Length: 395
Image (cartoon, rainbow, N blue to C red):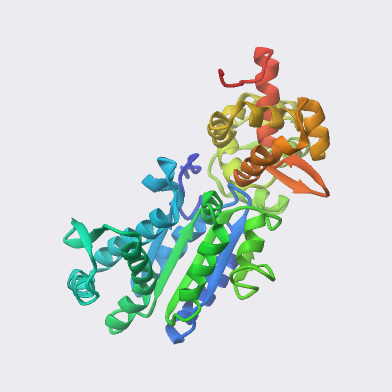
């Protein structure tokens, strides 16, 4: 029996990974140009759960025999997990990922090349640790850190030039790029990266993030005044259409039977987002004809599974941030309306509103703030209905 994807699985089987042929072909054609001295820089965007990371995994598998593919997920790094994502930690994540990918590809001489670089440039190194015999320096000053950052940003080009007989090019994939919004000076860091990326040949960069095209980071990256100033190719991954959702459910060997109104409700609940479709479809009973009322009840019963990301994010919010979210449950509001509801000054909302925007829990449209995902809204409303209170953190 074909297995529906689990909640966190991104390495999907052929059956689970459905109807992304056009997106795969488009990205493949762009990346293939890297072999011919081109250096595309791509931004892959879309709302959470639409399948961006799964697409990256498919692309990596397609190319990793001929290209050095460096797959970096900022959300899985120790620095992010320990709330220490800085410019320095991102440079180290990139360095460690390049080393790991080089070893997996079989570039055995990279350790000697890096050792030679450190000696030639006379780095002042406080101490040296190693990863699979690769030297990893710990520097004693900011000046030397700056040298390391420059070295790391130049490293993909150096690796290609030293191994052009083995490689057609180098791909640097950076997933969950929206997390860099935590940095003190995002713009400065993006401009720094761009200063190296723009001159590299045979090296392609793909930034991937869970955000809408309205997100402020899109403007920082590729807006008219952004670091890449319109030179970045932006590709948005969209949810499934109704017909694609129907076809996907039919492609599964599970015998799911939905009346027309039941399917309409199923699509309304999942909004065509593959992440939600996979989880909800896994919960539906087989071999019985489901009505719209069945779907409504099953959706309500499964909301904790569907909202697992939001439950985690909710636990990270301050009490004031949680109250802002609650104030937006029924309708979008202007900042002054939120302030009046919470009985605080409008100016005091700057930081919490910016954090909620950075977490992608709310968005700003037509001079109003609104909750990004209806699943989040439904989970909070269901929790209140069940317990008579919202799940505020203890103070």
